[in-house]
Image (cartoon, rainbow, N blue to C red; front, side, top):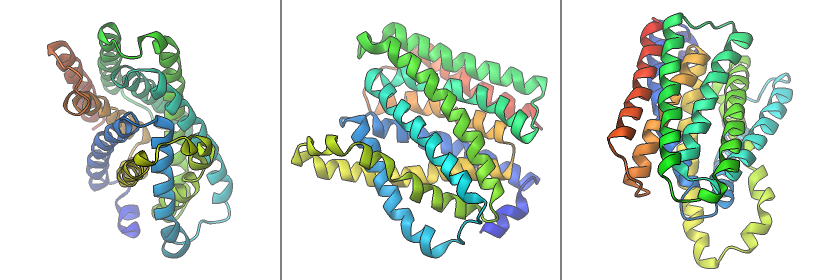
Length: 300
């Protein structure tokens, strides 16, 4: 599988595969966010997910995939600290703000910085048409956030700090997207990067939230562990899909396409969390989707 992925990188086949993987990552990332925003403390939800995917990844990292090259270890150190900062910001953000308000702000901030970062790091350049698509997508995402902000009644008193945290979280989304893309391109086997990423990344949040676990009612332990395992599986396919997409094609395009996750997040908020979706929000979601389509078509 690794050899085939490497062989189609940069080809037309790779471009089509990257498109599908980025859209899959978009849906799964929205689902991943909703799992953190459910009935449990978002800090514990994230810890349960991280512990689950760290434990599951351990045998693959240690015994299945090739071990990382020596030059990869400093890269993994950077990956670890960037993701720690991202997760702390994200959990604080979800703790203070309504999911349908803060999530679009996080996802809207991310692709703009990611496209700029991909230009500096990988020499990628968007056409005028693609920038028009980015502007369209961002208009839909931020429009959705503003609309939700005007109408939301949940967590209203903490919304301003939540929005500030959402912008900071979005900046770290861009940082980890470009840095991780650099990492997965640096190693010979992309699955080495993925296995070791999950193995290394899985241990911080469970340790950081140790005191919170002691206060968790025993009746909530099993449901939270189940949520962690489900979240781990979602994380494997979500993060794995977007990282493979950045290996196969342009980082900036993959980052923008992933932000259609905002559409999926609104649908999850409506179908699962019981939040209303009216004609205006539907139109804004269509704008987001249109922006992603423009980016993809203009890049051909």
